[in-house]
Image (cartoon, rainbow, N blue to C red; front, side, top):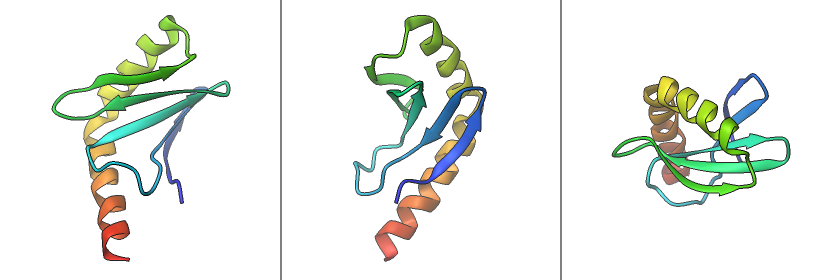
Length: 83
């Protein structure tokens, strides 16, 4: 299971189940993907082909919705642990 947390513009924000527990978000764009840490602050963890100018826009969106993503992440991880 891989819940979508948000869709905005041409980006999809999600996490993958059974992955590490450090808070993060994956962003899909045009068949490419980037991963951002949400804590201790928003930071690019990995990029698989998204152009730099798009990464800057994505980072601004991740920062804008970081608190929401963290809460969704907690809820999802909690469900996964309790299953």
